[in-house]
Image (cartoon, rainbow, N blue to C red):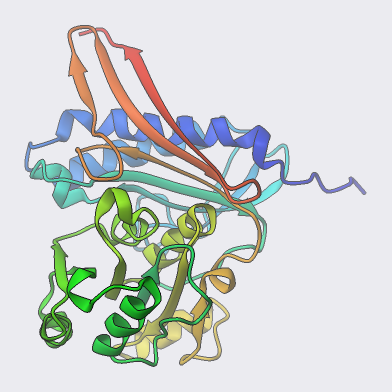
Length: 322
């Protein structure tokens, strides 16, 4: 019997950065072209190709839907050379397909990797999410608090007024009551149309992004990706799965989830040290988007390791032939 190979985050990190970079470069031709599906497919193809070059026994645990429903990088798909450590992979080849198609801010390619069994197998449902940045006592804000109480509690912890707090929320009809309640406290709201992985990541660097807290419902798979990012950057996150029908409850059961009301912390969604990479596709407050020059294309990638707390920003200038 062969001995299992340990997960070496340091050795795999640069390879993971390349996966994110190549997916972003592949989607570059579709920025502002109005074709979401083509942009997503280009990123998927490049991400799969690069993953299969890595010496890993990878399984996609957070992907683009079930195998029979997604021709993309589906949940359960095996990637890598088949040699090396067994790893869980969470990915969104193009987080913000609409943002890319319309050339709007904060489209990213996103991928996280950890040892096998380290990530919550979140079903393709909604998740109610709450996140803040680093430096606060655990539980300073919780899912059980109403939105106004969360704002007040965070303001007290920061030693400021609620008017000095900015909350990031997805602009959706389901959030109208939450938005009204947050605004009633005097806090500001930054509404985003898509891309709630980036929305959660904004909380980790409030001095740069101006965002103090994220709240609201978005995709559960994106919640696990966001938790992986915060595990590297620092910050707190909680998530609770939201089920709209029996089919979604069945998806949870298939994923091994029995407590449908459980509130997951960041470290329950991502239980071991992970590496995380994101490359900017369109310009945003976290990463610069793809820049075209004659004969070159330039990307910026965020590469992070939770084990060391390292956050590396890398600019990649790649020659291209036209």
